[in-house]
Image 1 (cartoon, rainbow, N blue to C red):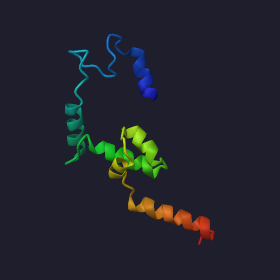
Image 2 (cartoon, rainbow, N blue to C red; image 1 turned 90 degrees about the vertical axis):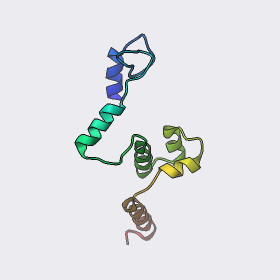
Image 3 (cartoon, rainbow, N blue to C red; image 1 turned 30 degrees about the horizontal axis):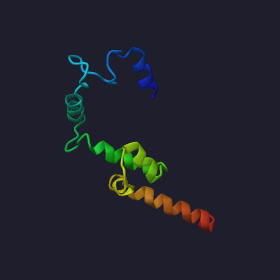
Image 4 (cartoon, rainbow, N blue to C red; image 1 turned 45 degrees about the horizontal axis):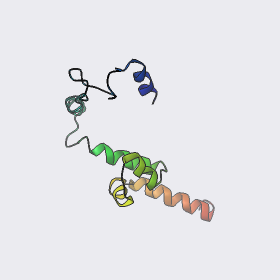
Amino acid sequence: MELLREHAKIRRLDTDLLFPGTVHKTKPIDLRKPFETALKAAGIEDFHWHDLRHCTASYLAMNGASLAEIAEVLGHKTLQMVKRYAHLSDGHVSNVVASMNAKIFGGV
């Protein structure tokens, strides 16, 4: 948010776009090339922009966000769609069970 606030201080006033193109102010900048360049530089294969939605949903879930909150962030209309995106890691699931056991059985 801090970066976006700083960006807002110097953004173009003749467009509503957050990141307008340099040639046409009505078209957003193309992030595909920089994204692909970053993936190549990092040695990451078979990863797509859309995969970031899955990562976001999963990290939100692992940090305690409710399904309704995740739906709001990702713009999903149904909880069924949220469940497709939010995947908990095995380690996180184990920690949740261990936490429950500790609360119920006093740390056994």
